[in-house]
Each structure stands twice: as C-alpha cells, then as structure tokens.
Image (cartoon, rainbow, N blue to C red; front, side, top):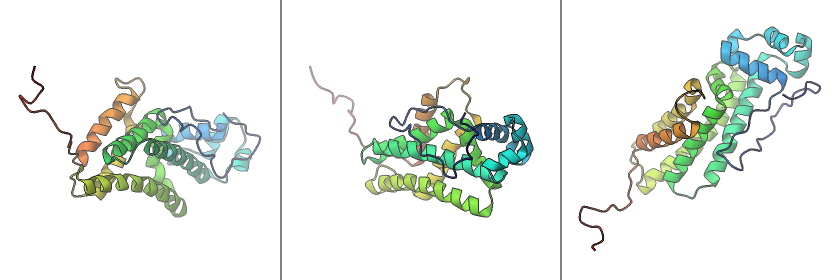
Amino acid sequence: MSSLDEPESATPAPPTETKDWRHFTPLELSPILEVALAQMVARGYEGTTVRTIAREVGVTVPALYYHFANKQAILTDLLDRAMAIVTGHVEAALASTGPDPVHRLGAFVEAIVLYACHHSDIAFLDSERRSLTTENLAHYVAQRDSLEQRLRETIDRGCATGVFTTSDPEMCGRAILAMCQGVAGWYRTEGPNTPEEVAQSFVRIALGVVGHVDRRPRLTSGSGPRR
C-alpha cells in the first residue's frame, strides 16, 4: 500500500511493468484505493459508501475527503489506472510483433486476457462504467474507444490482405473486446486453467470470429519427400 500522508495524484503514474508485456506485477494502490476496490468488487459502486471505506482504512471521513473529493473521484481514479495498465500492455504487445495481422490480433487478445486474469478485480470495474457521471463516462469511453481502434486497425488490415474474411470488422472488434474483458468476471486463480491457457484459447476463438484463413501451404497426401 502507498502512504496516506499525501493527497492522491489526479493522474495515475504510467505503468512501468510492460517491458515484458506478459508479466504482470501486483497492483500498487493506496490504502483508500485498495479498500475501495475490494468494496466495489464485492458490493458494487452503489453499495459502497465513503463511510465504509474510511472505516476499513482506519481514517475519518474528512481525512478521506482530503485525498478524494467524493466516491465518484475514487471510481474514476481506479478506472484510469485500469486503462493505463491494459493500454500499456497492449501497446507493448503490438510493438513486439511485426505487421502480420494474425500475429497482431493474437498479441492484442493475449495481452487483454492476461490482464483480465492477473488483475481481475480492477479489470472487473469496467462493468461499473455505468455509474460514472456524463463527463467522467465520456473520458473513460474515449480511452476504451482508443483501445478498440487499435483492434479495428488490425482486423481491417487482415481483411484487406485476405487473411480475415469477416464481412463486419466493426462488430467483430466489439465482440472480441467484450469477450476478453468479460474474463475478469469469471476467472479464478484456483480454477483449472492458467492465465496463459485461457489467453491461448481466446486467441483461437478470436481468430475464428474474424474468419481467419490459414494460407500457409499444406502438404497433400503423397506430396511428401520420397525416399
């Protein structure tokens, strides 16, 4: 946990863990944000009160307001941090691949699913975007749309080169992003699959969604080397 001595920064520091984009370090949150996240995941935004957060942290309500103007500010801060983490990993994943749309789609999906598995609590807060004010929702949607646009660029390129055959790239992009983000709602570390196994399964599913055509030459019967 971070210290309560100083007020929270209005803008989360950018993540520094994306050199190896498949590696996720534990979240570093202040006591207020850590408790608020746990409460919102367990009770939802509406069911979480500032008074409960303050009591769990061990501070007075006025002391909590020294760090955050209100509960909405806490949710906005958490969602900004969530977007900074997932965007950082996605961009690092894409930067590690070449121009091939199949590889880029795989990297994009893998990065988001690994994020949803390793940081399932903060990733789950995407479902609380409905609780944002109009202004804060517009800010969050703009970040989410930017991430979706990166996915659309990859799908569009795949369609242009003939490796993806979908007739509706926009709908495919939305479906893939929603599918990946939904992992946070059901993935459990004690379950039968590792984050890596889930990610690889979702890569295969995503390739099916866009109608991936494998154009690599295949050996036909009797075409192998003769002895």
